Image (tube, rainbow, N blue to C red):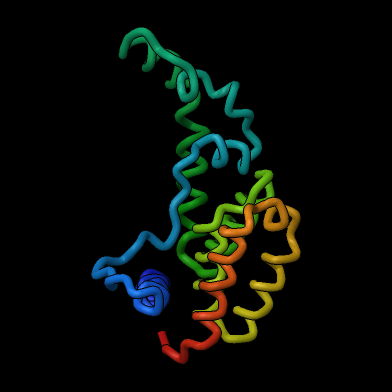
Length: 162
């Protein structure tokens, strides 16, 4: 909850500096919507997770195709639930998710910065240095690089205690 509050506070500071209205709702602190990344992160080939990524003709066919993959999905959900109980666990998943992709997700980068800001100012600086030195970051378009830097600079200036 603290990360979500800090995230929206930083975003609102940026929005107001740019002449936009402040948001009044919390953003999700952490979400992975791509099950392909999740399965890959846990060592499963998503192409072999029959029923999850292929068209299915009927509900019965869907049930038949996915019932054998439910144990793996349940294993992943239980593990993620455990990891999400700590800031370090969330950071671990964020970094691992980005390491399997060609590009760094800007939202993940901002979440990494927010969570590290909650831990300490030193962690914020170190996480920014880690982000800008990773190969996935270097592949991003210029406007995305600027967005991440803008969030970092705003967090660095912010003296909010959470």
